[in-house]
Length: 76
Image 1 (cartoon, helix red, strand yellow):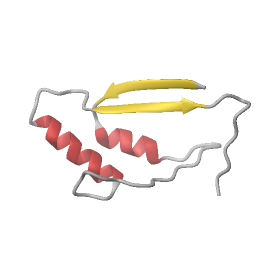
Image 2 (cartoon, helix red, strand yellow; image 1 turned 180 degrees about the horizontal axis):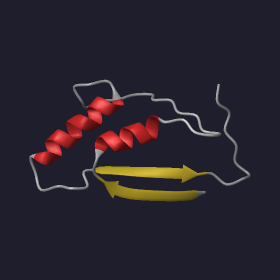
Image 3 (tube, rainbow, N blue to C red; image 1 turned 180 degrees about the vertical axis):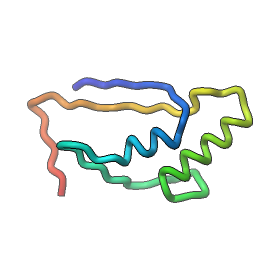
Image 4 (cartoon, helix red, strand yellow; image 1 turned 120 degrees about the horizontal axis):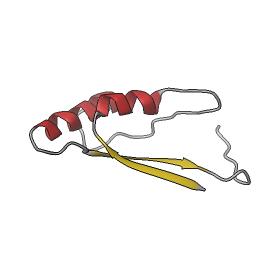
């Protein structure tokens, strides 16, 4: 399994990227908690607004997973 992680800002761009479906990808948002909004884009905009009140530039942590070829996943 390959793991890639990154600290980053620009929550709006990250939310749009995470929700975009591309070839052979399946996107499903299970839960948004700890924010006023229950929408991912608006929740990340909230995080962006909070970060603007500080000196923090990379207020988000994203991680991508690439399973090995031997692994498989069933999507209902």
